[in-house]
Length: 143
Image 1 (cartoon, one colour):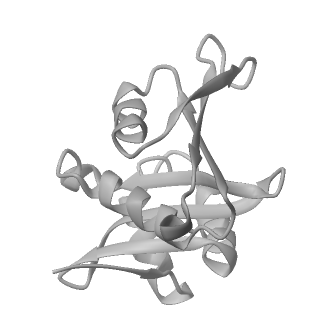
Image 2 (cartoon, rainbow, N blue to C red):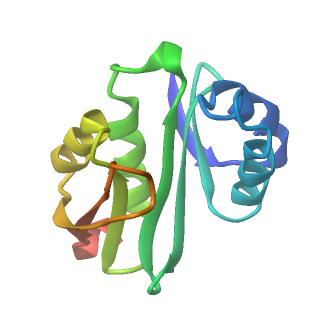
C-alpha cells in the first residue's frame, strides 16, 4: 500500500539509502536531515521508503519542489507523479515552481504530465546543462 506523509528523522537512513546522489556525496545526508526538519515528504510502499519530495517556500515565497527522489529500484512506476500530485495538494501558495536539468528528460515529462508548464531556464548552475524552470498555477482545490 502506498502512503505519503511528512518525513521524520526516523526515516533519515532510509532516505539516504534510496538517494542516488548520497553514495557519491556524503554531505547529502546532512542536506536530507535539514529537509526532514522542514519540508520533506516520504512516499512509502508497504511501510518502506520508496521516494521522497521536498516542498518549500524559499523561491520568492512561492511553493517550490526542491527535490523529488525515487529509489532507483522503484523508478518508472509512476511514483514521482504520485508524489508531485501530493505536493501540489499540500501547497499553501497559489503558485508552485519546480526545476530540473535539461538532461533530465524523464523529470521534465513528469512535470508536464502533472500540470506544470515551461517557465524559463537558468544557465551556469551545471556546466552545459541548464536548469529548466516549470510553473503550475494552483487552483482552490489544489492548495
